Image 1 (cartoon, rainbow, N blue to C red):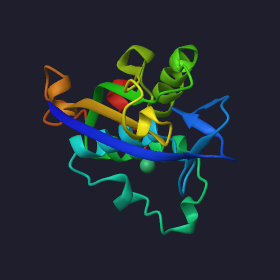
Image 2: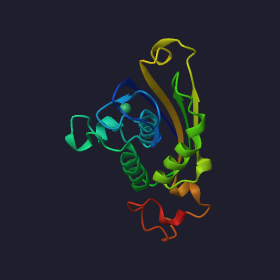
Image 3: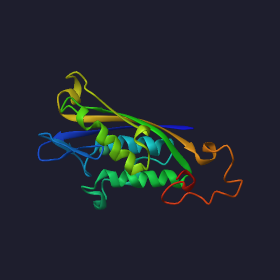
Length: 183
Ligand code: MG
């Protein structure tokens, strides 16, 4: 098993959509960034990449690259999921926390979990999203920005089966869709 952690922060500003976990949330401000600035999805991607020791999202998707300007972070999350699968890892679970003073996120949490699970081809019960405030303290408390933290666990394909499918000749390697043995 391997563990990963991710953390991200984005500034809030006028004239931007607020996207968290792939869900557009009605609010007077949105997060500012080169991509859609989905701070939750960015923290989750960094947790996954960290667990596989594949670097971070800045390495994979540089914010100086115009290809990623305004991009839907769910597309990037799918690419991260594919990269994890190619390395022979399975995602066991993800836990995450959005830190924001407002708006209230409870009504959107389950939809975020569904969107994140769908992008990674996981079941919803493998993806946890929580939300908290920092009691009006600091940059999240003042509404200057939002933060997100995430952790995840990965197992290798070999760990997932009592029989070593590689040794048994049954494993043909993980393609871009991830492990075919898992489907
Ligand atoms: Mg970010």
